[in-house]
Image 1: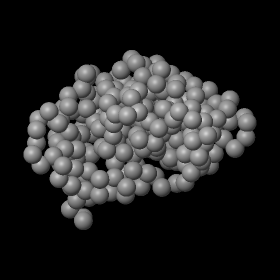
Image 2: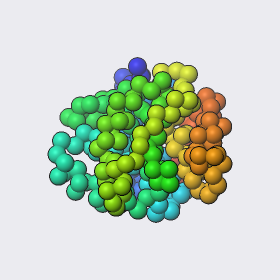
Image 3: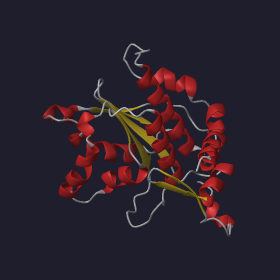
Image 4: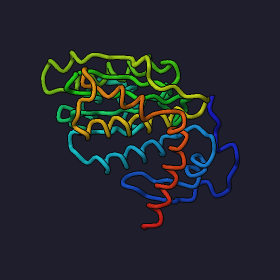
Length: 235
């Protein structure tokens, strides 16, 4: 279970603090990062947007939580096709999706766990990283099944496989799952940008295990908060 920052009743929670690309952060988001709280959609979307700025190559796509959620829960195939096409997925070599266990399309931010699904084109595989013993596997597979048919320009794209990373770094508390998503996304982007296949299978697993540890994840809170404050100072 995660702790809801809104229960604290901060009177200035809705105060706008930063507009970054298409993401608006408020005081409540800053409060989440200041304490041991479950990350919301806005913080993950902000950090994914920041990573996209750090790795601006057109071949990398970090999908915002709201879009990943809609792909997973879109009720009509026709609507999904129109929704996915602007993402230009066939042009991407690396696509990273945040996965949330919310199943209620009428209720925003109703989930209680985050994980990460990443597509690597050279290996033609979707890899699921879950920091809590794979409990989001069902949700990640739903997202995989929804998007796999749109990931390539030809019918061969539908053969992309799904892999549950069973030795993905594990969280040591009940609220850092979102931070693991940001940390793993950062490690994967760094691995891809290095242009080096450091493992025989040409994947990022050792890089993730080396870079994503309980201590490095704990530091992500202050790292993201400092990033936000530095961007605020520049405005």
